[in-house]
Amino acid sequence: MDKLVSSLNCTLHLRDGQRSFELDVDFHLAAGELLALSGPSGSGKTSVLRILAGLESRAKGRLVFQGQVWQDHAQQIFLPPQQRSIGVVFQDYALFPNMNVRQNLHFALFKHESTALIDELLDVMDLQDLARAFPRELSGGQQQRVALARALVRRPKLLLLDEPLSALDTQMREHLQQYIQELHKRYALTTLLISHHPEEIQRLAQRVLVMEKGKIVGEAIPAEESKKGFQLRAIWMGAVDGMAQVQLGENMLRTVVKENEVFEIQVGQVVWIRMLSKDEFEILPEIT
Image (cartoon, rainbow, N blue to C red; front, side, top):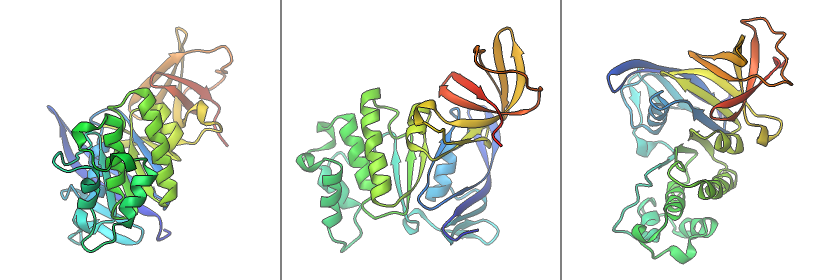
């Protein structure tokens, strides 16, 4: 495998309320890629992020990031978060309330490091006029921009985003997506995004992994046009009472049959589905 391609192959016992299950994932992440993880709550997405970030030491398996072993259970290797080149942004911002914007960014700076990058990030994120403001004086969108900027102060190679925009309204979320795109390209990041929003995924991600009960049950490919959503490999299960049915991992998905869709497909054959929204998709012939 190319040394710039990172890989994670691990298992971890998880508990979601009264339910317990095994996280069992195996995937790669290319340098410069923006990969999204999607799936229902409790499927293990955040646990994957925690393993990458070094916040979960119990996982059995191996994590290699661009040629460097970050975690290997068999060899008893475990690099703590501060030894991994990562930036992390959570949904709740996690800003220090007693520090203003500039101080929040400065706190993340390496000792004796130049403050030039702080000024640059304040400029890139349009935060120059808010540099002396405290978190309580900022809107949710402004706080999230500060959190994004702070995550990049140490020039990480890997940016981890755990539903960072889900608490924002639609207009603000779309505005922040532009900033994420700009940061990803400007600083040549490799980015992992966790999101529940199909529109957000199709706009930002180059590839999508769908998780269910600790496993990767589908991999999406980019659509030809972003407005058409992302495409997932599934199994055709036929049409019943005007509803098309496909099997995606352990889930049975249903949507209304459309006149322009062709169903001369044998049950059990591979099809591709294009997600249009959380509850609507269209069926495409197998891609050859």
